Image 1 (cartoon, one colour):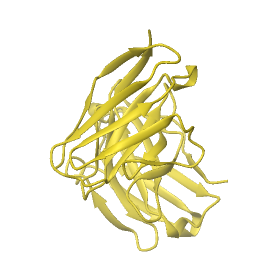
Image 2 (cartoon, rainbow over the protein chains, first blue to last red):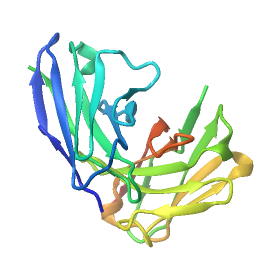
Image 3 (cartoon, rainbow over the protein chains, first blue to last red):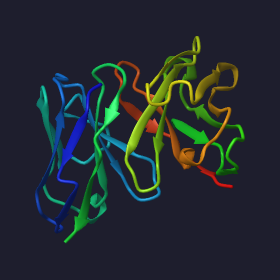
Image 4 (cartoon, each protein chain N blue to C red):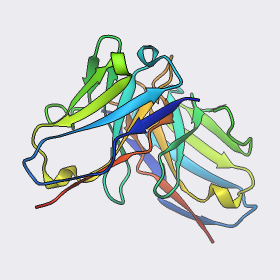
Length: 107
Length: 119
C-alpha cells in the first residue's frame, strides 16, 4: 500500500503570509494527487486535483505542484478563512490513502 | 445543486448492528461512485471503500474489508454503510463523498454521521 506523509504536522502563520505544505508518497504516484481543506466540525472540501488543477470556485491563491513522490500545496497570501487542516490524498490505485494532515494555525 | 445528505448521529452499544445512509440529489446517482471515509476523534481521514451504484460493485480498503458492508439502492439514490457488530473502536465520524466522474478524487461530500459506540 502507498503511504502518504505530510509535513509539517502543524504550521503557524499570519494573515498575508505565503505558506507551503509538503506531501510525500512512499512510491511514485505520477500526478494522481488531490488536496482537501477541512475546518472543525465540517466535511473536507476539494481544493486541487491531479497535483496542480484548481477545483472550480477555489481561490487562485491556492496552488499545487509536484509529481512522482513529492508534492506541495501553497497558499500565496493567507486569509483568515484559510486557517484549517489540509490533507493530501493519492489515487494511484487501491487502496487510496490520505496524509495525516497539516493544521494551519494563526500565529 | 449537488448534495449528499447523510443520516443523523447514532449512539449504539458494542455488539449491536447499524446502518447509516447517504442520499444523493442534484446529479445522476448511477453516474458516480460513492465512497466512505472514516475520521476517528481528533484524527485524520481514512478511505474505507467505494461502490458503483449502477451494479453495486464494491472495493474495500484491507483495513475495513470484512468489518463493514457498503451497499446502494439506485432507485432511491442512496448509499449505505453497515456494521453487523459494532465495537468501541468504530466510534468516529463517517463521511460519504462522490467520486469525480473520471478520476478517483472526491468532489462533493456529505455532512458526516457521528457514530458513538459505548456500553
